Amino acid sequence: MKYIIKVFVLSLALVSASGHGATIKGFGLGLCESWTKYENDGGSIKKANRSWVLGYMSGVNETDFVNKDILKMRNKRALFGWIDNYCIENPQKNIAQATKALVYELNK
Image 1 (cartoon, rainbow, N blue to C red):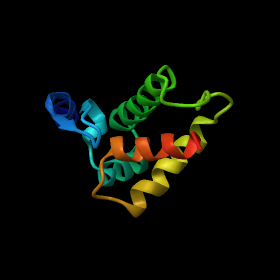
Image 2 (image 1 turned 180 degrees about the horizontal axis):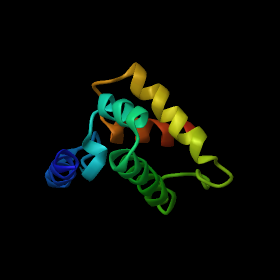
Image 3 (image 1 turned 90 degrees about the vertical axis):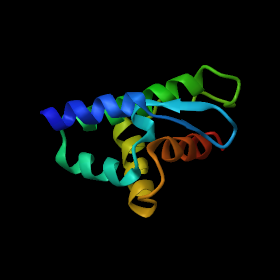
Image 4 (image 1 turned 180 degrees about the vertical axis):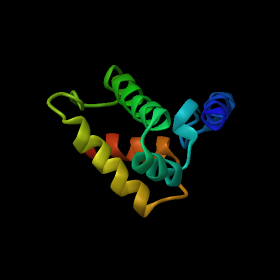
């Protein structure tokens, strides 16, 4: 339990910039290899990662960046499955990069 709390606090403290200069905070900074690990292990980190992804996508959905409602009629399992596959192929990328790639894919 102490490990989970430490990971959570560390994740909240981290800041990173994406390619277009926007600041990303929170669980999105975690590496894809940690996504894969916690997807298999379950628990609170898995829930936090998934919540971060849905929050990011909901936020993007509210902007003028997307041409359509990227979450409408989308199955959460399918979204997380897409992230699973991306992270298996790109373990050193972070969850924010995986989610951004998914947003681009859904916005096509």
